Image 1 (tube, rainbow, N blue to C red):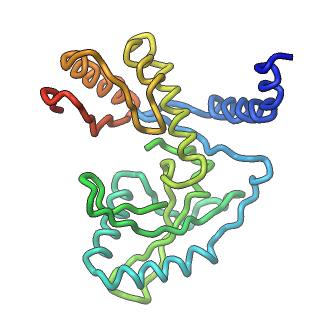
Image 2: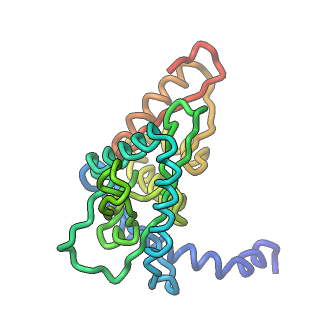
Length: 242
């Protein structure tokens, strides 16, 4: 028995599990309205989730108590949720909706990152999520910031939420799917991306400033086709500015 064959036997269960998850992804992934739609990856023994409502409600009360000490931060937090509602990232839950067999509420909190040049305030909770999975991505918020006894509102995410367990996998699988779909038209870019991508970062290099600029433009164009925004390019050559 060779070392390779022994290694294959040792990892047999892991490889089979990966194949199942990957097959599940390929069965449900689709591309509509200039963005990918995926389903959450479910383990067989986790199909029945607790609603988590009894945890989410006191967490919300604690969050509001914290945010009300900084009114500007509270307004900013609320404006982000309303912006997500406007953009369709989040949708309100209607009383007329049919009850789902899978229901789960996500506690949420804020992280303020003053050093960031992009998003200084982030809500921890942009691929779309299949409708049948959206009911496990619900969260609680309030209708009126001023009134401490205000009515609660329920919302749910229509996109994959940063921080949930399958988030990184779904991102990687979706990017791999996108690279495969455009390999025939952007072969040089897709091959380079496949060899140098880590989660949502790419570390690679080219031989000249001209090649770097061309690679940057082609990467932007290719990922834009899938609804992705490639940004934060760093360069060593001082002549290359984007």
